[in-house]
Image (cartoon, rainbow, N blue to C red; front, side, top):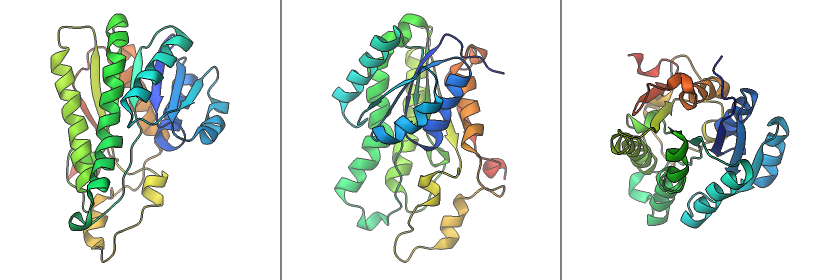
Length: 246
């Protein structure tokens, strides 16, 4: 089993879903976890199962808030070894009715936030030879209907990962990205199709094997965040329950 003993991890989106599952797994495998999300009440429930973990309500779309979150993590635990950017936002819309505000929100949560946190975390990660694990989506490696902003942001996150991997080739730092398929999170189970949606196109998103468990995706993130993945840098891990097989 992958060990994270002695690691300090800052994980975003830890109020529910994959972020919560990742926080719990990292703690289970020995890491000290600092979680951030907007909903502090929901995080309090999650962190009841994260021994020694700390959390803070943070808006990842704010550069200042991201800097403060990294500083708070380092102040709490003395270092930072792993940054895991899980927080995301997805709402289906017809492209022609997508407003400027809609587009900006897609990019702010799904791309700007990971950039702001990575930028703030880099000095600490470089100091210890740490790593960044970004969480994109299969929408970061292919198209999805009614999701122009989301796809653009997640493709951008894959591109950001590759750019950082090249930039820090000569440093003891690793940067990788996981692209999950469908999981039984609120984003998937509570989504609303836009008016007059074509369900033939929507159903293309699904894996023939159905949803994955968040815990199974969290295991891939934990592996990439661990020393077991020491030789993995700049990789794009598609974790989609077989959707890409055909």
